[in-house]
Length: 200
Image 1: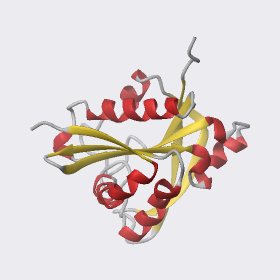
Image 2: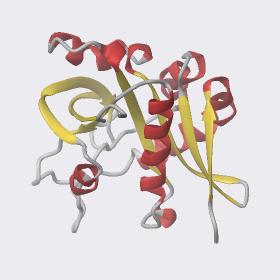
Image 3: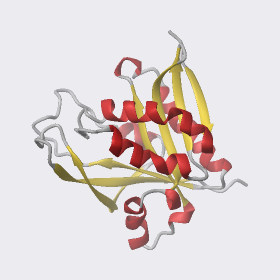
């Protein structure tokens, strides 16, 4: 079955907020995030994309059904917790475009959609004048009890796209986990960054 990639900007993303919430809850329940999500928390989080100028949703569809979504917005419009590590490191958030999440139904993985998500978000950031892009990923120990056998992190994929892990840029977030019996757990996320050379 073929898939389609659609890029939605600014107010266009609102039509896909429910799909983004549904996919985030389902995909982030998996390792490594182990997120026990709920719709109210998702609506609050995704409101930044609905209300912020410069936001983008890259939507993957198959037979008109949403099978994946990848998000992004200027870092200056993101939650303050994402901006703080940059500010504390002397980096101006206004110079950075932030990639939120890429969530894709399991049966569609391995078909190059992840690369299409990055291609489209990077192109959108360039169109807005950004040369610096970033995202963050949760830290999990290799011996985590819920780590699936054969699990491979995305580090190699991200590195091949030119992103570099920045141990000095980290954010802390709390969320309910599938293994936390309903209580919130503090999680550490590390940023990855890429700087595109200026056009000559």
